[in-house]
Length: 412
Image (cartoon, rainbow, N blue to C red; front, side):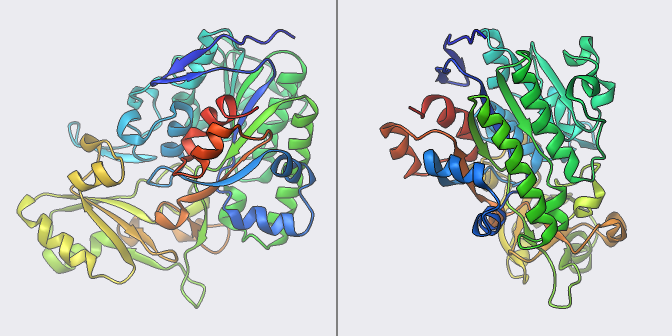
C-alpha cells in the first residue's frame, strides 16, 4: 500500500505524516481510573505495550468537558474560541432558539482530516454517535459514518456503502459496549482492505456513564477494547489515543443524583428572567439525563449580572462562576455563543435547569457524568516514543486536542 507523506497544514500547524497507517482514537469518557483499574489486573496487554514502548502522559482537555466540544477540538487542533463549538446544545441568541450543535455549519475552523485528505491520505472518520458525523466530516473528501447508523451509509453521502457486509457486523445498539467495539473493528477492516490509511475513531462513553472503574462491566469492556487495539497494532498502525473528557460519580451519600437546579434557584432568589442552558444535552438521555457539571445562564436584566454572580459563588457545590468576557478568556469560549454567566460545579455535583427538564428515570445506573473542571485531566497514550522536542512539550501544558500533532509530528 502506498502512503502519502505529503505535508499538510491545518489552523497554523504543519503535519508531516509517516508512511504507515495513522489512527487517532477518542476514548470517550476514559478517565484515568478506568485505565488504571484494568492495567492493575493485567487486562490490557496491548495498551500496556503502547504505554511501555511509547508514551502516556496527562493532558488537559477543552472546557466544557463535553463530547462535541472536545471532538471538534481534537479534529481541528484548536480550542473552542477558535473552532466555535461550545457544547452539545446551546441557545442561539440571534435566532432565539435552543438547538443542538451538531451541524458542521457551526464549525469555524478547518479540520485536520480534510487537510490530510486533500494531501492524498485516504481518510476515514468512524464515530459511535451519529450526532458527531456532520461536524467531523466537514469538507471531507473521504469516508465518514457512525456505528449508530452504519446500515444506512451510502457512497454519495458517506463515502462508503454496504458497511455491515464489509465489516462483518450488524449495526450495534448505541446504548451498548458494542457501539465502541464496532468503531475499532471497522477501522481495522478499512486498513486491512486498503480503503483507509488515516483514521479518526471516536467511541462512546455509555459504559463509563453506567459503570464505575472497578466494576466488572467496565473491566470487561476495557479488556475487549484492548483486543481491538492489538488488531490495529498488528497492522503497523501508529496509534494516538486521548479521551474527550473524564467521568465522575455525581451522587449524594444516599446514592441519589446530587443536582443543583440552577434556574429554580435563581427564580426563587431573584424572580423571573433567567434561562439556564445545559450544554451536555444531547439525544443520548440514558447516559446522563442532560445533567453535567457546566451550565450557561442567560439573564434578561443585565444589571443583575454582578449580583447574580456573587450570589452563585456562595452556593455550595458551585466552584467557579464567570461572566461572558471572563469565560471567553479563562475557558477559551466563543464569546458570541455563550451566556451572561458560566457555572462549573464540584466533583460530585451536577447542574441542571428545572426538574421537569431532566427525566432521571431513564438512567441506566447511578448518575455518572462530566463537563467541569474535575473531568478536565485525561491521559494521552501514543504507541511510539516521543522525540526530544515533544517530550519537552509534554512536560508543559499539553492539551488533548494536540493528539494529532503529538502522534504525527512528535514520534520517532
